Amino acid sequence: MKKKDLKAHLFGPGPKRILALDGGGIRGILTLQLLKEIEALVRKRTGDDSAVLADYFDLIGGTSTGAIIAAALALGWKVERLEKLYRELGNSIFESSFFRKGLMRPKFSAKPVKEALEREYGDIRLGGPELKTGLAVVAKRLDTGSPWVMHNNPKGRFFNPMPGSNSTPNKDYLLRDVVRSSTAAPTYFEPEKIRVADDVEGAFVDGGVSPHNNPALQLLMLATLKGHGLCWPTGADQLLLVSLGTGSKTLALDPKVVMDMKAAELGVRGLASLMEDACALNELLLQWMSSSQTAREIDGEIGDLSGDILGGGQPLLTYLRYDVRFDDEWLKDKLNPEQLMTIADMDRPENMDKLVEIGEAAADRIKDEHFGRGFDLA
Image 1 (cartoon, helix red, strand yellow):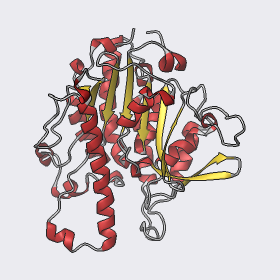
Image 2 (cartoon, rainbow, N blue to C red):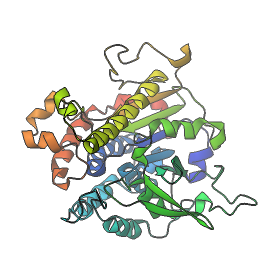
Image 3 (tube, rainbow, N blue to C red):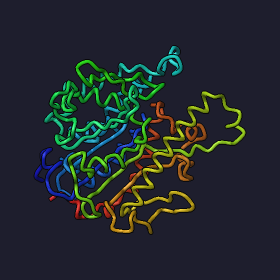
């Protein structure tokens, strides 16, 4: 198999392929099981046992834990190497302390994350040649209230130095700082500072507190909107978007429990619900504008949108979404009552083995026929 360079991935002829990876803390190890299945499929299709996902996908993007995975994949890592890293770091990153409860100071120290990212990514820059394919990382710049999508597209407006500006070009951001900024979940970890101009440091937090914890729609915009400079062609045979979740759980509560909640707990529940709503809207919009063999029922009124196309014309893309609902009936045979209560928590490394088991079962839903032959590598 002939390897493509970054220029060919970003600006060569289509069709094009995008991989979008959700946030979710330690639940990212579930995503890795889905990725292993896709990696195996790519190797089978290419006949190359050394093929990696950076060979197949032209743009890989993620939020939070998805950003860690996306960056490593874009560097050409095998999924097996990533899973080894997750297992090594799970306990050290989410090591609890009596003095850290997430109220007066973050629940966890950022030091293990920073040390791991520095060790693995070194001084690689966002514009560095080490990146084999397109990469996008979603973070939230909290001091300005704006979501930031930091990427390695050289045609991006802020990628190179701007005449008359003292702002730091995106290409010069350290990859480790970009990824760390996307993982700085409020109350869990302290924010990350990035020097965005000669005299300005931005304060960044987890991209999951933007509408893009599921970054799939944002990546579609990055790939197709003229302002971003990629301008990839659309069409069900021209653009493939594969979106992977970390597992989710319905936030259903007894009304009396809600009415008795303290204000702080209501705030936390409200934010979690908002993130779920943003993800659901993301899926709704993508199913509405695409051809999808994995479309799920959005709700009892509009169904899975298989009979609807935005604008009434042709699908803009082929869309595949793979995720797990932790409250699905089949999981009750795999989890005891206590595990069912905590499996959706993003800071429990003791759940890793169960998350792997669930991810392996969910990977059975990834079918060869979902990936049209038109998207095979030439």
